Image (cartoon, rainbow, N blue to C red; front, side):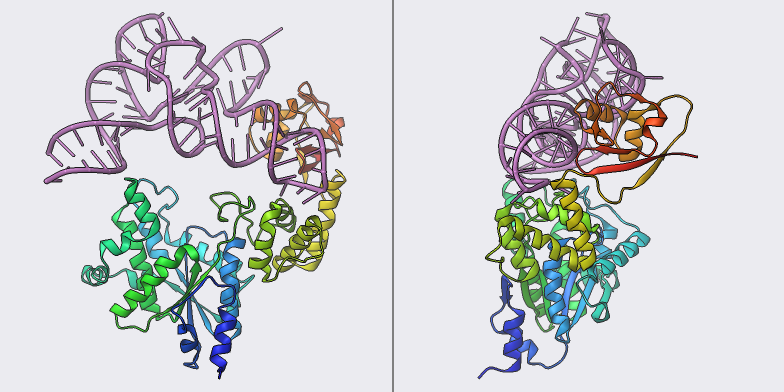
Length: 391
RNA sequence: GGCGGGGUUCCGGAGCGGUCAAACGGGACGGACUGUAAAUCCGUUGGCUCAGCCUUCGCAGGUUCGAAUCCUGCCCCCGCCA
């Protein structure tokens, strides 16, 4: 016969990659108390993107069944930084920055999680330990065990540097599990090693071992690599509707089924053409992260700007200085859209700049203010500004 | 402690006395095309008062008509052996 716990377990194990060990989740659920489901966060990266939401959605399912999500802010590790040469991506952060990042993170995660059922913890609380305690922790694991991890193995074999601190990270993460008594830890499949190590370390400390749940990795908008901010192929959950919509449409068709599965938890609609399916996907994502009205507006604007080649309904206004003489266009473009004046000149030469729909050329360096007043300045396909003379 | 390899434009990585604002690849941006902010093709990718000028090749000096390239000192990084 199947119990309630078995049912819950099979529901929660749905679309996971690993749920280890076998039967462990059902046993935990059978305890009948709210489980503590852990997720560790890197406080250096406050930008939550769709890739993270795959794991967050699973956490939400736990919450909806009465369990508690324990978010751990890795403030201690961030404060220490990573001394190995390859670590420009791990700057040392101040306490205030970490707090601000954590707040921002929770705010963004709340688009998926139920903020009422989150326990927020900072790992400096327990990692700021004595040497003696550190020794106890490091004794639980051997170097060989750590070098088992795929990326360490590759780097070691390739004679690339691995700092002791990097080796220590998995141990610190594992100790987090000891400290918060986690029943379950979630992560992407790339976290599998660390999550399993958590079990070993918990056992060494005589704590009940956590269940390891891994989720598939979401590919980025390039359809190739894992979605990440550093790869520049991400869609942030806080991005404006228009951005989310447009970026979703840039997804290669072949990556669509995966996105439907991982983000919406359903198969791709079988009857739609790729084009309609992608628009439907984009709409659903904007609806979830913003609202139905925003989604409709984003769809309309996309149609207008990219299909019809028209200007958007709403254009940001910008004022230009009302000098006596002509206005220096490269300077104006640089001010409006960023970049250098030289870059603006190149854009002009490439026919990328339009004024009220008319393409300007490399010779249009100085324009009379009268021509600019009230006009729409466009650079490329998607950047628009309405010009107003400063009073 | 010993031996060896390095620090170049956003990233990776060529260049090793002039033809170097610096190959090539990636990324980014622009154009054409498209259902698409995809793919593909073409182009751009230090700054500026832009047919010219100015500032870049770890830092500081030096040699030379001329240095990313040679010399001296310094700083930093990496691997191997012990």
